[in-house]
Length: 234
Image 1: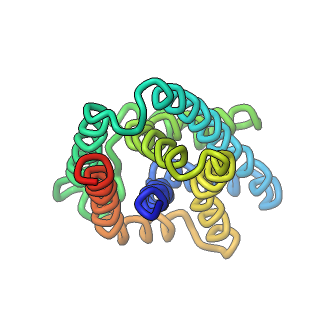
Image 2 (image 1 turned 45 degrees about the vertical axis):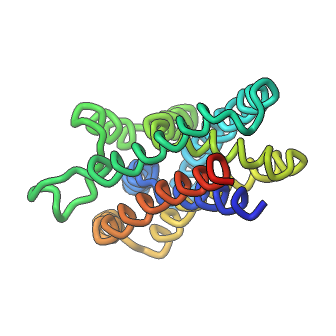
């Protein structure tokens, strides 16, 4: 029970520290403030957050239902699936540490992420030119989808542990997870409302990137270790 709860907490913690949605949201909010009133910018920002909520809730629920079906057929103790999950989380840790943030001297003082230049430019353009609620919701959905390689294993393993812990709490855990996924966006919104600039917020993100890199890498490795202990060693 405690291992299951620890894995769920680690998954939620990793989700809150991922940076792509936060970065795109900051660019969007900055330009919204420049084009309209603070009240309208606040209103539009909620549409972006809604997009992130929609993607996270729908994809998590689908994952939960699929995992529930697989476990019904295979059970919790299928050793092949256990080793696959362990391998995935070790790979996630290695990839995140070396590839999530751009490496090299020219990126040392920036918070540039793993997305290629063309995708990054497209996201920035959409963030700067989003005009309607629909545009903004879609932008939130797309930015969440791009990080799916990092979040999908979290959806899967937390779904497994929710079912192992107590499936009656499934809906509650999903709600908590969705809230956690959007909490950093509300944090960025508060920073803007406190008269922080985009440059200042980006500087904060850049200064903390090594801390995030270490914390998330440790988080993925910790999940792998807990899955090993509960699924292999027992």
